[in-house]
Image (cartoon, rainbow, N blue to C red; front, side, top):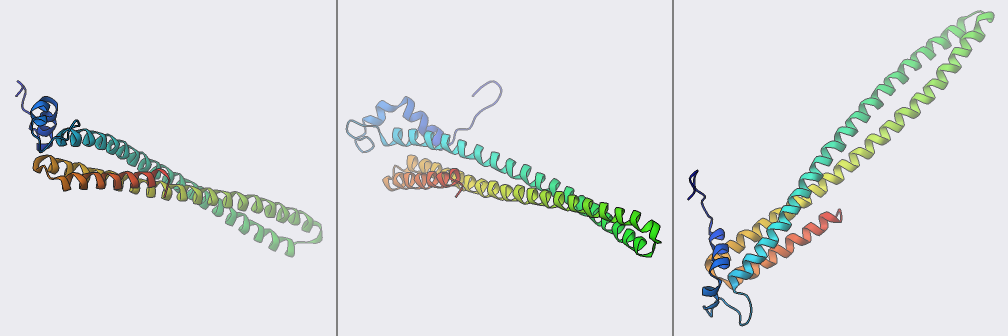
Length: 204
């Protein structure tokens, strides 16, 4: 207990402390020590530390991919707004072209050529605006796809992190109960978590 408060140790913390400071006692127990090797407690403690480290990396990657997904989604929304503005501009030019065509058709011969020039100009401007709008829509679609890919990868990292957390929980129970089948289950679940992490890294 410190002068500023106290820290409550979990069962797993006690087992880790026991493995670090009481290793000689654990080695004296034939039921928990492998001949010439590491005790069950020490082995699980080391594996748990490795699993926790890998889990922390997976958790970081999950957070990073989620942030990227939101950034890409925001970029897609911006491009969609810009494309919508371009289509509104296109519609405005179409209206002006229609009015110019009406004026051309009803104008006298000496003014008809001037109105035709405006009709041609509006048609060219519409083509440029349409091209820009379609380009922006393509960019928005690309950002959306990247966002979905990042979100899928985020879910994979989250799944991997959760499975590793289950493995750590099994390790704590194995340390308390000294059950070999729980130790094997811990390793099995840890391998499954690593496999999901590999899927996340491969964008699968």
